[in-house]
Image (cartoon, rainbow, N blue to C red; front, side):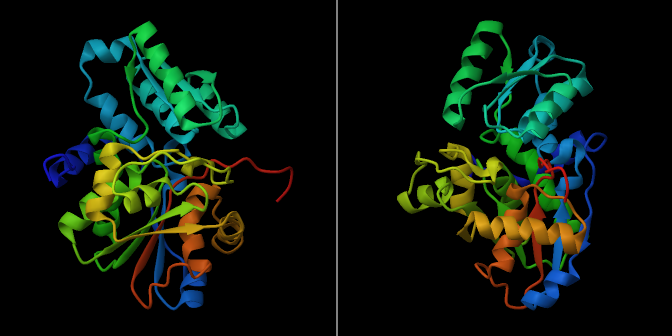
Length: 315
């Protein structure tokens, strides 16, 4: 357990981000509850600053850097939401930020990072390609890396989502969490399972991008050949060593979803819930509407991890 994030680290992170991150609402979803036969609430991280939960971990890590390291500037690699979070956190501290994003990143995420003051560099289409480019730039410029998921300060920051859920709804029994690199589910599960072990944690991944589920089945972090998915935030080719350890220790089950199921859920959240959610964030609701996960009357939270979604000319 020594390598896993403990509750005091999440408590420290909650204090660190208190003045910066939004305490997002936990909204009832009666339209969904009626359909699946269980009370459901939505943790609306799509309403978070920069449009996703990522500011929690990014700000927590940057706040803990040595002053000299922080002044030199930070860099990250990201499909988009973490890039915007690092840009926002860097702006709060008045330091430079560089973000390496895929050439396929949604326009709203690229423009969002730039608008927050970051230097945006586009590199390849995979997490491995952008990580290599970011590491090269970091070495050249003497910048501090802010990894998107595989760091204890990132995981502890994301764990504040779980802390808020349990404080706002102590009767929760199931929590459904999207999995990209695994920072959000690692932090949420670490908090929940050490405070309320009976609460089930269910992870969701797109079919063809199930790096975490494959890794759990293989018993070690495994690199997969990722197929494209509209859930662009859930496509790392390999989970982190640390996030893998947390998921293996704390997560009850991982399920996969088709793009059609995810798209349908995002549309229904918009129509019935009046919430704009990106496809990565809608995957948790897709687990319920597709019946891939059936809570059978248990009080259920679905985390809507982000809302940064390119929109067509009309809805």
